[in-house]
Length: 374
Image (cartoon, rainbow, N blue to C red; front, side):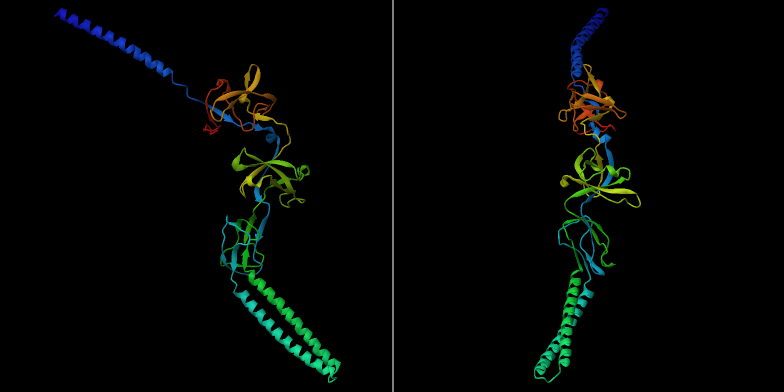
């Protein structure tokens, strides 16, 4: 029994040795394959460089308006029968916007027609009297005084016909004024009356922003208005599309300050109206004070390569970084101003630049740690 037990122990040890010999390469192989997994992209804070012309510029906020806006209203009094447009509708020139109840004005036209018929009858009677008295005057049956009286009566009746014709034309025009039409193609931006409402002549029923040029209206304080001139180039940025600047120029400067705010109204036009923001949107207008091509970046974005300054630029397609040499112009409280090597559309790494290497792929995020789609 002792010999048999010893034989079993030796056999177990041999099997354990063989198993260890088989498993060891598998474990080593597994460890080596895990080490071969590529490193995941590192999160990196990125941003566009900011133009120093924007930083140094005078900035004014305003609203986008159509260059031409019309307050449309009826030319006669009446009760609105129907309103055919709503706010936001685009209308064509001549399109009907609203209608008044035409009953009263139709009665005025009928009355003017009756007056004209009566005037014509009186004129015809006076004309026959004139012809008869003329024949009698030629035969010396009446005096010149009697003939002059009939002649003046004819002239008066002729004048009455002309007066009645003018009154009829006015009544007919007023009957046509019961239809409110758009005088130009454009966008309805406001409605000030509803069907069933009694309105007076000239009351604004709708506001029409004409198609075409758009502008930004800003308010400039008294102590700065002297430096503004018509035609001055500006950069316009919509609040809804921060970072996208559009070229424009000052078109109009009000000659008189507002009595309440004591500011001057300045109108700034877009160079390309097709790119202008929607009406009513908020926009910033930048008046540049420095025309030099310089860029402002955070100080943390600056990297040193061989003793020279550089920044990491992210490739929008591959998301790999590369070093771009730059020239430092000045250090400011907001950051450092650079020139050369970068542009407005470049994405640069603004933090952790010393942990990057050439060609490394990153995961770009913004200041709130949100992923950015380059």
